[in-house]
Length: 385
Image: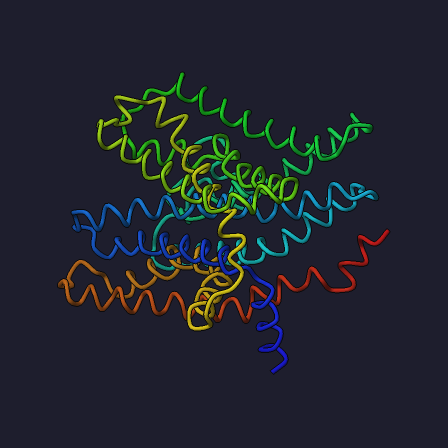
């Protein structure tokens, strides 16, 4: 009963619009990987599902940057800010992300070994989030590619903030935060420019592995969300007053950009600069434009709000479990090659149901208790001043 009341209290404090954004993101990723059950599928729907999977992760990046950026800004601009605050910020972040990641990494190792496949030579890199630091990663635990982007982003930002504030102690911390955020964005725009100048590529598959999913080129995806967090806190009136207009602008920018690429058939071979340098930032910026509206959408009717809330809180477990563990495990137990279309539809339905159910149980039994340890008095006591 206490657990149910605590969960209800958490739900009451959450913002429906941001939960909706996260729920859409995880459903998009889940839908795209469900296509592995239908490898021969072609047409509009499979293409949209594949596209949605890519966009789902980009949504996660922007939303994560926005939420963490707001926390980091409030910590950094406190009058009594010290490096201890940044250490506690990182520890809280790691209690949220590392237990899930490492246990599911170990489960992936066990599963791959059990079905007789070879583990990659790069396996040790996975334990340090180094598997895709400067180049494309192995197909092992392939969905983990986004985790190094986020983990590195949340070390680089606080580290640079501390370095800059130490060097320019008299500067306004709000200015330092903005300068650092913009510097990170510019730096990782330039890494994409460098890639465009030095890598000749005409394949989106290659682009997907060697640019989109490589840390060296992607930290700006998080920091567009951090920049949005800064604007929401420094210019709240503008943020609230223009939320509808900015939301429409985001839709127009996103859909208009995709339409232009299709209308003029701007493939990566014909327009490498657009794909290598501009495409992902434009997507991120368009998603940022949704945040003013969504961050003010506080509540929804219970019959909508409850399932969206549930999907949102289990999204991290769904993301890490749904493909390498659940889908590949099910395909090992029941190969799909001999199934007809109706049997594959049944397989897909069971897979989706199991993914949601197991992820929910995982969240309640393991993820949430591990995350809650960050508020344990002994942990908090390590950072008391």
